[in-house]
Image 1: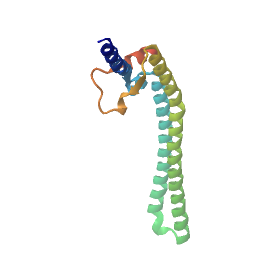
Image 2: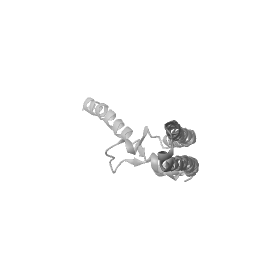
Image 3: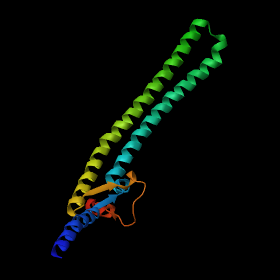
Length: 166
């Protein structure tokens, strides 16, 4: 009888350990946390400011192109072929500059977002690590990576927000 009890205990022990381990997995909504961070608002403001400056420059280039095109259309019948070719080349050059600038602006926006976003990601990761250690979670997973999360799962989002002072 004693052997049966010991055998049952040995069989049940790993199952109980696994059940306890499974409860130490939590999920968090990283996007919700990031959007609540004041650094995110500052990043969005900086990105918007730079985007507005780029849009203004593109508008200036567009206005220049529109004016030169209007002048060309109005005068094309009275221009000789050499001048027409020069004006067409000038219009193409303005269009090329505008295209190049738009590519440059997009690249600069992406670089600014990466530069300003890196400290936000690092701060979030540190908070997630701290919450995980403090609450003995084996894992904290991002809820956006899953199709289904059980209603019984532990939501670490409020703990992470609290850790960040949000």
